[in-house]
Image (cartoon, rainbow, N blue to C red; front, side, top):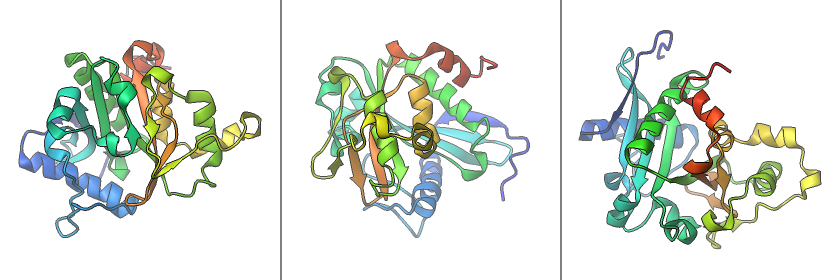
Length: 255
């Protein structure tokens, strides 16, 4: 059991194989052990969640030096890195042509996770601050990436997905579209039939955080059976970010 009474947080980019393995071990704990996901390159013996894109991404790590371990991870892929990888990771699930053809500087986010003992505290704020510094350093204009609901039961998620479709759909010029082979329409319930309170309770905290910052979602959900998730593609234009929420996530707003 990890004590989180007095964490000592530090953000760093992975620079060694040991750093990368630490990120992959945390991802294994969250995505494989906790959420029952899988994948072709998952190493169950070494307890590493990995894929072919890892060598091309930057891996942002949140360390708790008081516990001596990585407790948070963000995986980041800029447009120039995606060229080397041959595509963005999300292109396996979504048609990204509106984004890639926009001429904007893009950053794909993925594999975001926190150790279970650090959820609900200040750890996520530190990851947000690290991400904000990275975005500023690389002059990123649009952030995007898939975020997940646990499970693949569309009927159970009908209210939440419909709410996202009706209230938070991305503008056409920046709208990813779920690939038809695994796509599900998010326009399931009419707007006036959505129990908004219940729907909001179903939406994962990370997705709600992006929405509060001004994020929007692509068209359609993608069913990822390998990871046992229902994915939505989030898009955030930095020019349209909610500045009050930005200050909150940067820890400079007491509200």
